[in-house]
Amino acid sequence: MTALITLFTIYLLLYLFRALFKQTTINNYARFTLALLLIAQELFLNIWHIANGTWSVATSLPLHLCGVAIILSAVMLINNNYKLYELNYFWGLGGAIQALLTPDIGIYSFPHFRYFQFFISHGLIIMACLYMTFVTGYRPTQRSIWKVFAVTNIYMVFIAGFNWLTGGNYLFICHKPVGGSLLDFMGPWPWYIITLEFVAVISFYIYYAPFGIGDIIKRTRQKSQIPVS
Image (tube, rainbow, N blue to C red; front, side, top):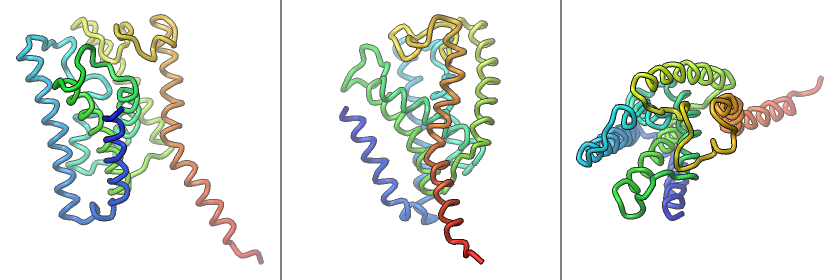
């Protein structure tokens, strides 16, 4: 709970001081610092796995949505890339928020390295998305929802082949997580994958909702200001 409160406080401060971060010099330093932290924590995680003899192609590559979002977030921050923002907004927020609310770090609790790495990595993914939203002014559109949905399914096909070759379970499309997760409420394999498709669309619209509602309010105000002849 302490970790979640700390992260929420940081996000709130980012929003409150967003004008400060819009200054060119501060903006550049902030973006590159966030990108460096994202890359660094991923390197440290792999070094930890190698040092403990637990590194494996089948389990340790950043191929889950959050893992991919870490890499894409770093590139997005460096290049101010809007197309990557579209992916990260839905992949990053969707995956990272769920992960933080239902952390799966096994036996590793505070103050173990994995505890800090887990919350820092997922917290940074959300931070990167919010930074590009609050500071850079990016936002998703309804078209973004279906673009990301299509890319997600294409990526899932690629990962299915990779899982078959390596014996991995990236995206959890071969079986559910051993430690339990929300997938336990979505039926047996492979039907929970179909359920996930519907859940993905619903969650995408939920994350888009603040912008959609804002657009409706804006249009309503504009119409009310049109003089009647």
